[in-house]
Length: 116
Image (cartoon, rainbow, N blue to C red; front, side, top):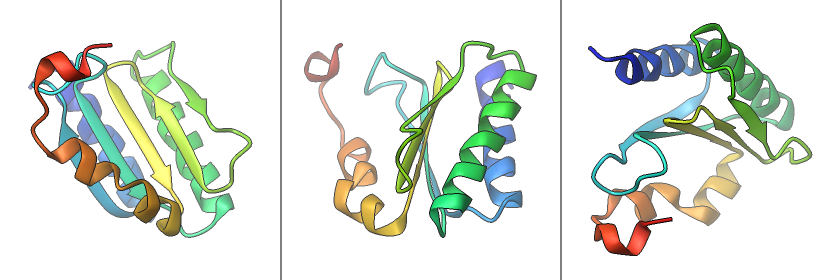
């Protein structure tokens, strides 16, 4: 396995052990140049979402992704953990349903439409 795949597994295990719900992994390699994987999960409360994001950030940093950071620190309903090649969204279930990221990113999108 490569480093990104190993890191993906570490993040998934961290989310699972900390009771994240509905964990979904989306392979972005053929869809976007912004990251290799997007992981989406739900938390049960703002405190749970905050804790999950902090746990993921700590795992990323401990595994060599020193520039990783949390976006949405002020929000209690959504956090994004930027792990450079791995993006982790943690939502409150209602916000997750509203944004439908799984639907957007699971569809095949021509590369020329997603170049940033």
